[in-house]
Length: 290
Image 1 (tube, rainbow, N blue to C red):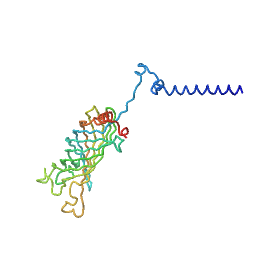
Image 2 (image 1 turned 90 degrees about the horizontal axis):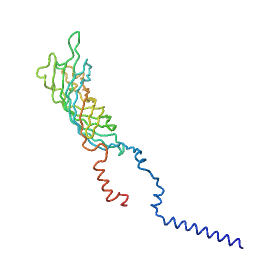
Image 3 (image 1 turned 180 degrees about the vertical axis):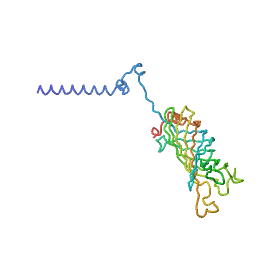
């Protein structure tokens, strides 16, 4: 009986101690417990910690001015012996809008522009006979063209450098022509023939790089333009037009350099981001409202 009594007293004492400890824990401030568990770092240690910042590109826009040179050929059918025709003037303006594909892939964009440039062709002169192919007596032709391209753009950015590529369509209008040769048809030296097409269209692509010093970017591009529309009516020959169709498709390469001005921020917090943060600090997030 004595042993049972002693056992009950010991059990009661253990229960009281456990209850007292729980009461003490309940009375502690949770914040104080968290503070006690926090490691203590000195200022000297914090000064040595390196924080790696993630390089994030915003959705941003550019306005650019471009100048370059062109190298021109024509793809003739029937084939003719041609060489490259060079021209020094190719310039225009572009508007570029970069954005995120599917909301999270920041490598894409669109670009539209307005350019003044050239098309043309030059037939090789036979070294033995001194003659060459000709059209309306001309073997060296330069055509003025105004074009409007619309390209899908891909880009990959570094802090002060970027790689770019583009592909899309263009439409254009031939505004003038200059024909040179041994016997140019009278009246067509600087005029289009009745069978010439003035409207043109086709594919255009670009590949290049940029040097970036926000908010200005310097771009260098190699552009390729291939016309889908023939230079003239395929059946224009009065003698053989009904039997033999003739085609001439422009093929041009342009090397350009341009200055582009950022209309919105390329990296860092935009005004939209700052306004959203300010709104959330005052009114809370949508999740908090719910």
